[in-house]
Amino acid sequence: QKEVEQNSGPLSVPEGAIASLNCTYSDRGSQSFFWYRQYSGKSPELIMFIYSNGDKEDGRFTAQLNKASQYVSLLIRDSQPSDSATYLCAVKTSYDKVIFGPGTSLSVIP
Amino acid sequence: EAGVAQSPRYKIIEKRQSVAFWCNPISGHATLYWYQQILGQGPKLLIQFQNNGVVDDSQLPKDRFSAERLKGVDSTLKIQPAKLEDSAVYLCASSPRRTSYNEQFFGPGTRLTVL
Image (cartoon, rainbow over all chains, first blue to last red; front, side, top):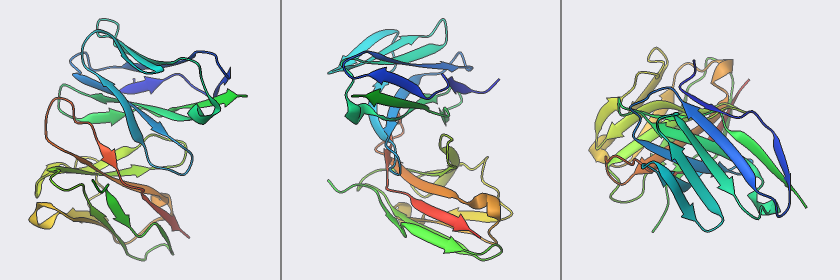
């Protein structure tokens, strides 16, 4: 089992729709969870992090964490073409390592 | 606040040659990371420094890769000799403190092509 897995893409959504990106992790003691956005040919940039169960909202972005299910998700409301990118889930494990998932490519269709 | 700086941005070498990458983290950031990102994959940690000490280098191919962070600021990553499978983007990131969060700020990366 891979340490951090993400739903396989590419994911295509129409402009204005909600994009849902999912991530599961294997280390039950993991502490912090991050979502990075990476545009093609660019480096990752942090868009959100979450460490408590429940939801965390920032503008059009909502991160959801369920530690019992070892699941973290990112919802993007009112998706825009500028949201088209690869989204990387990263997990800080109980052994103090940050592990990145393989990423999910999102395409927002105008 | 200036971001993480890396150089060169691009490098093309032949297999068995040597190459070095440089990183200057955000001022005051104690933790520095080097990642390898192969096309279509997530970043893979090669080495993590806390100030000038190594915290984690478990995935660094030590027979060919080396890294140092002198004086706890700038860092260099070297590959000697390079192999075809080393073709990737090498990302440097820094983090302001070693806390529970470890949010990281990435540099622009160095794209390495090994022929």
